[in-house]
Amino acid sequence: MKRKILVWLLPLIVVWFQRLIGLTSRFRFLTNEAYEELFKNKKPFIYSIWHTNVLYSPYLHRGKNVAVLISESKDGDYINQVVHRFGNTSIRGSSSKGGSKALKAVIQHLKKGLPAAFTPDGPRGPAFIVQPGLIAAAQVTQVPIIPFHYECSRQWILERAWDKHRVPKPFTTFVVSYGDPILVPRNLNEEEFEAMRLKVEEAMLNNRNRAMAEAERIYKGDSR
Picture (cartoon, rainbow, N blue to C red):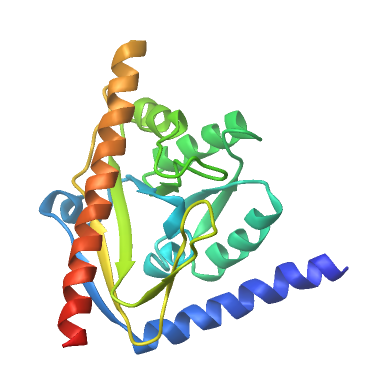
């Protein structure tokens, strides 16, 4: 009973906290024409999000009916509630537990023309290493991968967490960055699959660096 109360109460607190931070914040979006065309024409795609960005990604994509792949862990129960409260949906599973079933569910969601989201280095890391499930989903569905990352000009970084999670401070500026769409070819041998995995990983890291550089520039400007 205590756990059920916590699973209900803690996400509620998180959601209100995020809305409060959002009301005090500014937003700078770094995007590209190819992604804008996909979004405008309601084409399916896969947001690829590092685990360090799990906290505010549902808020930044609220009301978009994004299917988020969430682990079946205890922590996943809390994230699941937050995702739903922001008008998105979820599919439970990971590469280590319930992976095959979850991947099939994500593929079915994408085939309906709806977006999905992966944290390809979750739920346990290593951080900033793309796991193969993301590549497999994009390969089967022929839906492009969109690297996504946010940094804030003022934020706490949880240094003891394996993913160095970002927690925005009040009155911050969110830098929200979308990378170029990446299409994974349908037919790949083992070496080509690994090369594609590395290509996506590099694109995600470059997108992260882009957001970090802009957030640092804004921070230095605000601090003068």
